Image (tube, rainbow over all chains, first blue to last red; front, side):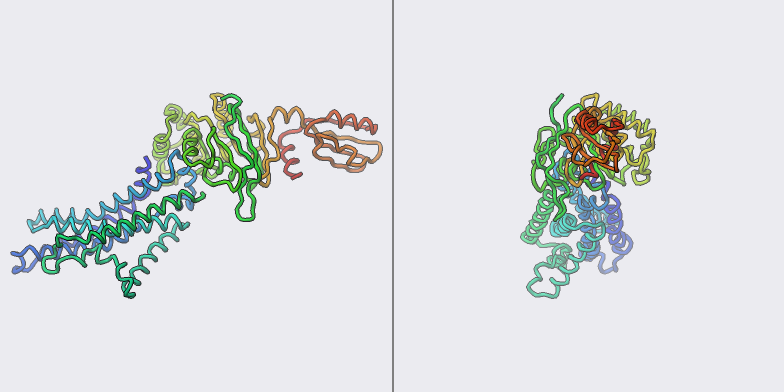
Length: 240
Length: 297
């Protein structure tokens, strides 16, 4: 039932993020398929519009991943329910693990949802749709961007206070983005080209090359994993 | 489990910086008994309970709950399977309904008794579909108690269980605690309500400023604690009545008031030696014992 508790805790955040993340897909539904007559015979203009729709969703997703990662035992302490959770016959590692698991599923669902909407739109309109483009976009977004979620989990394990953790998590992302943009040797830390796919997509076809940036995805996932393990270690040692 | 110790601490201590919340606590709670844990605000009662349940780590010392070390992570988790706990602030998940809270809690415990849960839900008049955040303080307390009493644990730890309850509900609570003990559970509860402790406890522990000042059975307290009021023909020095068992002496001219934890006969004998004009011996209630004990500390 821990998963159920985690779902109840995050469901409103998830549903609000789902509504927001579907806005670009909604735009695609209304505008994305109205192409000029000379574009209609080519599939690539459709792929371009699908990709731009994805870029919009990816931006929302990064914020959504942070929101979904926030919360947990330290926040429960601030709201006064941590002693109930911690006296359940469950290890702290499992408490954090289940919460992370539910968050990962939700974040992945948010990465997939716009593409499901776009697929339905394309099927409804009878316009081209590339499954490989969709798969690559989802993989880059969820694989490359899960570090945002893990960072929020880590911040939530360290920082007390309902709103302090939110402020710090977003502060870290904005700072990292600004530094990676302006400081030359930190450019590798800019995840935006990775999670949106803009750094890898073919600008003519808006499809992805066969060789995806696996090392970057793996590095990002490894950092995310380390952050989750650090969070578990912190929670196990923490006093409530 | 009769006579076995369900809680045993050895020099258990907890400090927060320079503040010592609990000092060298040697506590023993026996099975099949109701143990009242008395103390003023900030005496260290909740800190002790939190250490027993593994929520915080002791700075020094240690202890066992149901035979498992409190500092051993896995042992502590297994202990929690057999312990029902109601925390001081009655924590519940605000976003769940009463029904969801019950189903959620029931899923973790093999000793859950659904028939008792249904019975208490009716008796406590809790609305199953209402969200916890919309419940009054008293209703939240009732729900927290329902979650504990619907189980069949070996140890029931209740931190200020009657807070926020009306007199009828307090009566029901006390009867349920006695019934739980009757079914074989050890009940360990902290309270500011001395009358409640006096009514149902078998054993009383008094904690003050982190130190255990008293740990004895209520029967022994009733048998041995006495207040002896004397009127002497002339003023007598306090030290004349400092004999074993005497805890406190107050003198006011020829009047002497002796508070004794035992050995009242020796005090009376000494009074006769001084040709006391009047000797009045009265049993002492737990309230007075508590006040005298913490005052002395």
